[in-house]
Image (tube, rainbow, N blue to C red; front, side, top):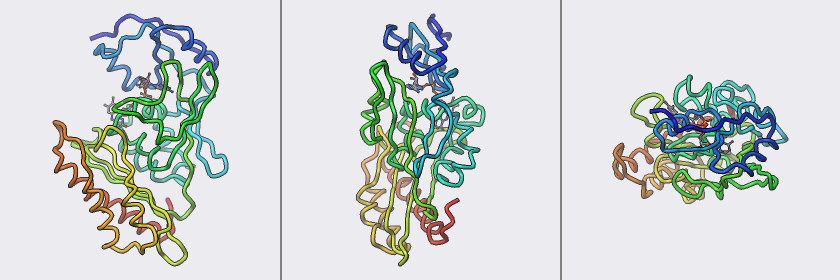
Length: 291
Ligand SMILES: Cc1cc2nc3c(=O)[nH]c(=O)nc-3n(C[C@H](O)[C@H](O)[C@H](O)COP(=O)(O)OP(=O)(O)OC[C@H]3O[C@@H](n4cnc5c(N)ncnc54)[C@H](O)[C@@H]3O)c2cc1C
């Protein structure tokens, strides 16, 4: 199928783009087009106006400001995958990006496009949840910053209003020497995860866990932080029994079932993948070799 007819707009600045969204009816922004293109071709989405963000340099690129990684929404997934800065300071993100689609889709697909699209099995919103990211949103009314926990509202539904553009994602970095682990199960390489699990750990001078972040994707309509399991880890030595008990809590979630996997199978994957992610994170934290 072909998309329904639309008018194409190519703004060169964020102000021009937000101005277009403020005055045009039934307008949609296009970033990498890797999700929107198929949706328009199938006519799940029928837009009268397409506002292409591809020419807006001010919302692309990766910068470090203090201990915060700022990712412009239009940064291509492939650029993040090969960024030295990301590899050194945010290695969990690099590991997760390698599982996103194929190199062809990562060449075009953007980090902001994926976060705005908000697929519950996507690794990119999951990374925002794992790192407590802050989402910067622009419109003709100004700029607002939304903690990621308040950004995702429901299945593929975010706090973005129709006239708003996701401008940047800010990721507070974990200290050098933190441990990380990422595991996912998909039917084929490049498919969306059936379940993905991400772990971040920091150890204190006495070798005990001082901070933990555990996140699952593919189990619910939004990425899920396992707060109870995180709390159970803090103050404990990262021994197999302690990590296993936290993984048991991951396996006790109430996941959704669909044609890809049952509730029981997703619980099994959540437990096993979390145990593996935690094991990797603990080993890396103990070696204090973040990348
Ligand atoms: C074969 C294939 C396999 C894939 N596998 C995976 C996978 O394993 N994991 C994964 O995470 N993704 C996967 N994807 C999706 C891919 O990552 C997309 O790139 C991503 O979902 C959307 O990013 P985009 O830049 O292409 O956005 P687009 O397709 O251009 O836009 C997606 C949606 O977000 C909106 N949007 C985009 N940018 C903004 C913005 N800045 N502000 C407000 N709204 C915006 C658009 O209006 C649209 O509704 C796959 C895609 C394909 C084609």
